[in-house]
Image (tube, rainbow, N blue to C red; front, top):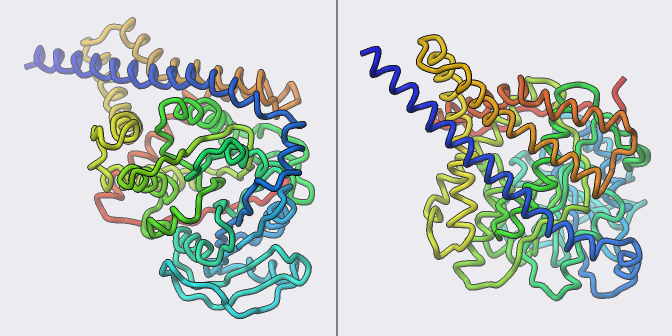
Amino acid sequence: MMHALTQALVGLDWMILIYFILLNSFYALLLLLSFPELWTHFQLADDEYLARVLATDALPPISVLVPAYNEEVSIVASVLSFLTLEYPRHEVVLVNDGSKDRTMDELVRAYDLYEVPPAFQRTIATANIRAVYRSRTHSKLFVIDKDNGGKADSLNAAINAARFPYVIACDADTLIEPDALLRLSRPFLLGRNIAAIGGTIRVVNACTIEHGRVVKARVDARWLPGCQTVEYLRAFLFGRLGWNRIGGNLIISGAFGLFARQYLLAIGGYQTGNVTEDMDLAVRLHLHLKEHGIKASMPFIPDPVAWTEVPTSTKILHRQRERWHRGLIGTVWERRKLLFNPRYGAVGMVALPFFAFGEMLAPIVELLGYLGLVVGLWLGAINRPFAFAFLAVAVGYGIMLSLWAIVLEEVTFRRYNNRTDLWRLMFFAVIEGFGYRQLTVYYRLHAFWKVMRGEKGWGVMQREGFAKPT
């Protein structure tokens, strides 16, 4: 009996070791694929080129959609950053989703809002709209006050009200860099049919903010936002760039992504009830394009940057990561017909299978790996060299990829000019694998329990506001 248990433990740990080798090797492949993407990108990214872009009439007008719920601490600065973007023609459509704090009061006070008739067609059904406002001081600002219906419902209301053919979905706790829309719009000048474009999200915690702008980028010294800074660098700098080469970008970040309004209307907008509406929308867009034979691309571009506030407490991080993973489980299950279906190209054959088996199941596999390792060592079924090899692959490989992301940041964009920040990034890249990673594994495992119970709530996301912490 003991011999059979020992053999089972050894077999389990070997299978999990192979799983992590394959998973991290795929991440390494994404890293390698990001190099030619970066080279192609920098050929179109110089400031002189952007100046010519600003002067051209070829850029389409854009509607910036901003859902807001209980954002009183940051809403005024956020809206100001949206209104003052460098772009030939854009509007800001902000939707107050039944906030229970002073979000609406702050908007009325800061932007001198006055009520106007709701002169737009409700193509997509949404929760009840209470009132519609314009600003006396900023003609680009349009505000919708509605009953609470969730983020997806708010974005649908904004899509209905948008006047322009392309829309950008932004979170209210996001600060967009002044030239981000110009950088995001470059594919339009290459004659490509665009369904969606993703931009980069960076961590704003500890940065210096003036008039709705990040004037000095810093890395937060606190371990929780510090680890997330490295995590965001890795995810955006080579993770999504690598997917460009494969053709399977499944996530256009809900905090900063551009979409063709006609395709959003064609698929019925955002799906309410999905707690990760951005991934679900991207998958449904791919599905729509493939099934209707539409040749339209959904690229990721690394230099249009939006800054967002990340959780600073384990309680709020728990809610966020559990919700993200719950949404991933729901999206994979609802779109399971795409899995290994050659009709849907790279999305069906590579991207969705990777997210299903490499992302969705990863916390379960990692937990089994840790348990098998501990029990195996205790029973003497596994020797110490194997245990070290297991940890090197499961944790050390991830640390190496994080360090490579920092190297890419230093040789390309260099947003952090202080040498202290570079050392902080390297420090957090190392300690991320010991404690922070295991925390997020636990949070993601909790998502499976909530899915089984049928829970669909978001949970409260508390903010510090855009101020440098003391």
